[in-house]
Structure formats: structure tokens, C-alpha cells
Image 1 (cartoon, each protein chain N blue to C red):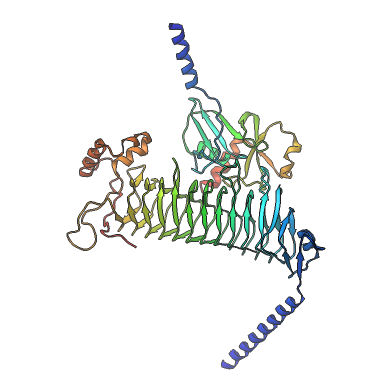
Image 2 (cartoon, rainbow over the protein chains, first blue to last red):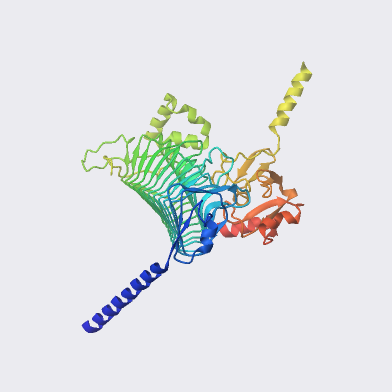
Length: 421
Length: 148
């Protein structure tokens, strides 16, 4: 037994040695092609023509006015400081058509706005294992467009557009029918959606900052088994929309400053089996809007200074809200029905007025987060002008004593007396 | 005096019952069905009821789903964004709906509308892989895919 193990180990060693040698050999064989305004190879297209698989193209400082550059070899294209490719508002700039391409340190600008074609600064089409790192994108229609692309990495990029003032704008990072892609440490602003996923699986989105986009900071459509951690979404049309998707993990994100008549920090529509934890939902018209969604666990989040903390539509069922903190929201929870099939337990509510005479950290009486006024405003939005009026206060008190209109079953049986962090 | 009064009244009544199409305010209006902001001028749709109430949608899919799921009076008219001249709404009578896998509509089912009499050469942007679909079929497809 031991001998065969040693045998396999030594075989393993040989294989590794062989691979290393191959790798070195390949590197020894690969060359660096320099593209410069004042040398023989003055365009990126000619640089790619002269390259073989494994080569590196180094782009010297300068503005290169080129578009529809097709990369069909597994090469690295690296820019020196201030290497710019200008699409001159026509067509697309770079189109990756084979696996294992690396694009680094290049400034892409002015990929053309087109109504009929989704022009992007970089289009990654039907390939895998490409890396887009440390680039800058300004004023492009779409920034990076991944179509049927797998195992790609989009890291450390600055992706900005002035879409807010333009009549039309595409998405910053767009994924369509993709698998296993990583989007990390990017700053994205001024696009339609900062990051958009449609029919994609297993995407990992971490540590990005997506702000001032026209529609959403991040948007899932029919995309399952994705994760997003530690991102900041602020000042977008609305924060993040998760729609028609399953198994999404949302942890440690910030959703903030989304103000507008129908703006929200977080929207769930038709999603299932997802986990939402440790997020901060701060200063939104609606913190979390939830529709036709079920089997979600929502815990340890902070809902602070929102108009509505949670708008829970009655067609959402079997969701668990636990150990969340609600501070200074105009309405903690509102709903559109007297029925409730969701569970609220052990949350901290700063509006809770009960006592803890048992000293077990749990309020002695249940808390009803849906107040009468939120129900009235749900059916008649204009009644919102009565907010803070004495008339409403009197109604609230009488409703608290004898609940007639508010959902009898929507209550937190064990409200926490202390904040939970 | 009475005459003027009558004229005013009739003007008010006429304005009140207007069933005129209203342009979609892109990047501001929200879809009446799915709640998404309407941003893409190539898509978008509108429903006008007989009483003149207007609902706007981000896609043909959402209009179809809305009429499938929510009971409304017989609509006065349906309008679709003209794919070939983005931003312009055309009435259902004057349009044909096409499904093309090459096109990504906001809700993912790839429906788009163009003018009925649009010359064929303008559809070459779609590489001729399109297929015209009747409104009834659109509603059936949306029902089949979304109400699993």
C-alpha cells in the first residue's frame, strides 16, 4: 500500500516537473511585441497579426484610434501608463474570440452608442478563462459584455460613463448566458445597470462599488446560484434587483441613498431559496420590496432611516426574518393584505414600547411592525400627507388596543430588547 | 355666458376621457407589471383602457402577462415600441410582433415589434432569423414560460 502511494507520488512529481518545463519552454518561446506610435508596429491590429499564442503585446503611451479589434489568439495585451484606445463613438473596440486572453492596464473610451447593437468596449464572446484587470473605461455604451463566456475574471477596473445625462446608456458589466465568472473590486458608475446578469450561473460578485447608475446597481434576471458579498450600491435609480432567480447569497453589502417615488434599496421578485445576511440598508424610499418570493432567510441585517423598512407583498410566503435591526424607519413593515405566511422572530425594533420584566432580553409582549397608517397609505398613497398628524396617532392607539385592520398574524412574538450585531 | 360655460365643461369632459397615446418617459417610468424602470427605447409597451387609463410596460412580455393575470376591462388600444425607430410607439393594428433569439428584450423572451409595412431590407439587422407571432400566441408563450 505504502509503496504504491510512493509510486504515485513520484509519478505526480514527474508530471509536475514536466509541466513546469513545458511552461518554461513555452515562455522561452513567447515574445513581446511592442506597439508604439513611432515604430513599425503602430497599430494594435497589426500587433495582433504578428503575434502567436502566448505572446505579450505591450502598448506604449498614446491614443490609438481603432475599433473592432478582433483578438483570436491566446495572448496578453498590456498597456503602459496612458495607453488609450478610442472607439471614436463608432462600433465596438475589442472583441475576444478565443480562450486565455489577458487585458491589462488599458484605457478604453468611446465605444459607440447604437440602438440596434449592444456595442461594448470589450466583448467576450463564447470563450473562457479571460482576465480583464486594472483597466479604465470611460464613455462607452456597454463597458464589458460577456456573452456565453465562462471562468472569466473582471478585476480592479474603473468603469464610468456619463449615462445620467445621455438619453441612452448600456450596462457596465453585462453577463448573458455565462458561468463561473468573477467580478471583483471594480468601481462602476453612470451606466444603465452597473452589473447585469441574465441566464447566468455561479457568478461571484465581490467588493465592487456601483453608484449613480440610471437603473440598478446590480440586476439579476433568471440567474441562479450566484453570490454577492461586500459591495456598495449607492445613489442608483434603485439599489439591487433580484428577479426570477434562485439560490442567491447576499452578504455584507450596503444599499443606500436610493430616493424616488418607487426607489428601493433591494427588490426581490419571484426568487426562491436565498440567503440575505449582514447587509446594511440605509436611507432608501423602500428598504426591501418583496414580491412573490419564498423560502428566504433574512437575518442580521440593519434597516435604518428608510421610508419603508420592508414592503412585503402578500404573495411572498415561507420567509424568515430574524435577528434584524430596525432603526428610525418611517414604517418598519408594510403589507397589502391581512394574511401573512412569513415568520418574524427575535428582531430588534426601535419602535417597540414593551418591557422586559423577565429580564431575558426578550420583550414580554409581541411587536406588531405593521401599523394601521401604513395599511392606509398602501391603499391610498395620497393619505401620506397625514403622516405625524394627531388624527393618525389616535387611530394607531385604538388599533393597538383592538387590532381590527392590521394583519393579526404578522407579529414578532419575541422582539429583542437589544440591538443585534 | 352659458355658452362659454358649456364649452368649458365639454372641453373638460373631452380631456378627461382622452384615449390618446402617451409617450413613455424612459429612465423615469416604472413598468406596471414587473416594477422595473423602463430604460430601453427599442422595447416598451402601453395599454390604454376605454376609460383612458394608461399603463406602461418595459416590454411586450410584461403587457401580455398583465393582460393574462389581471382582470381589466376590454382595452381601448395596445401600443408597442417600434424596434426599428426606437422611442416611437406604434399601435397593435399597425404592427407585427417578431420573436428573434438574437435579440435580448428586457424580460428575456426576445419579443419585439416593428411596423407591419416595414420594408424587408430593414429587418436585415436581425439576419432573417425572425418569425412573426400573433398577439394571442405571445400571451400563450408568456403564460407557459412564466406561470410554471
